[in-house]
Amino acid sequence: MINNAIKILIYITKFIPHKIKHPVAVWVFNKLVVTTKPITASSKQDVGITTILCHEHVYFYLLSIKSFFHFSKLNLPVFVVGDGSLTQKDVFLLKKHVRNIKILKGKEAEKTIFAKLQPYPFCLRYRKETHPKLWNHNKKLFDPLLLSGFKRFILLDADVIFFNE
Image (tube, rainbow, N blue to C red; front, side):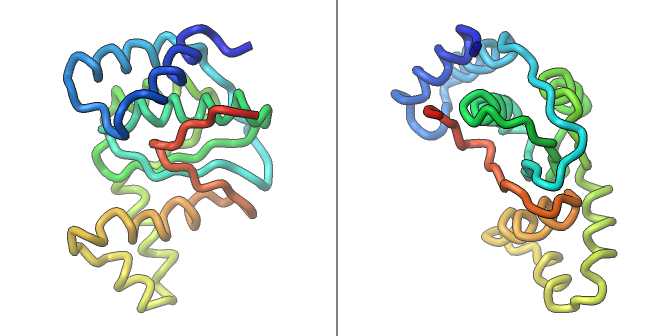
């Protein structure tokens, strides 16, 4: 059964703008998220949930993944690629709330993805592009998909919340 904090969070998100900006609202949101019960991701399956995640969206991601697990009634493996901004505290929080989560931090991910894309020079050039409008898109296009190792995957953004079964 979903606990009360998750119910409150899901109810609140129906009435707030896409991004919570007021510092007090952010603090309350984060405190509610950390009071939710941890989930346990499966350790092995061909289908998994993969995400690219930044420091700013860790709490949103926790609500997203927990709402997915609750409403879908699925138990899938979870793989997160850090964008380079995740802190040790973020990694600890993710591992505490999503047991069996696999996290690949920014530098490790970059090194591995560049090696995987080496035989594909146009893909590699696009992935290395640093134009501000491409920065997240080119990472999201390659990193979570090629680094996860899943045969099939669900690409989940941190700002997606599930409301129904």
